[in-house]
Image (tube, rainbow, N blue to C red; front, side, top):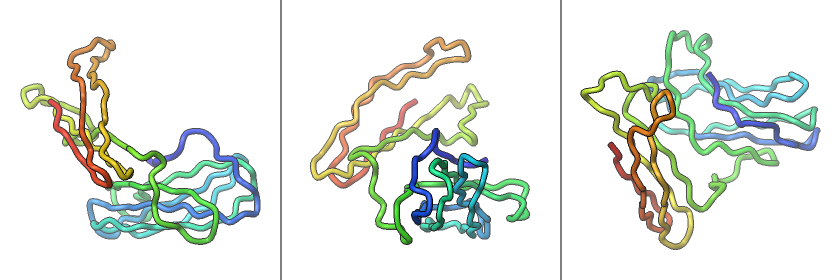
Length: 178
């Protein structure tokens, strides 16, 4: 399974591009693929060895077609493993031969996570717990506001909560829900 962007990037054929990301695995020596896939079906890739500490990996390539998508994920066959967990963060595609410092797309970014493997809850007695995490890349404190709503298989609301998370400047914050 690869993490990929949705849609196509419009690029200039012949111009060097660099795809980079921070990667971490559940064990040492997990092989990951960093991939640029052109609309024609042509694929360029780089295999990298990922360990248990976060490390930035990069792949410079020259596209031959004007449309492509990028993807990153574990290569179980090359890793000689039946399963692996690969965490991917701070993906960046940019012009040039070298990755520059990561810069978030938006001043405030957030995501939800769970402790449950595969985000699948199988023990009703244990309940479902979520954590919302946010990072504020701006120079002033920000507030993340929204509604967290959990629905069942039939899209019926089973839990709802308003979220208001204050995030200091150049910092992160999190809140537990559940």
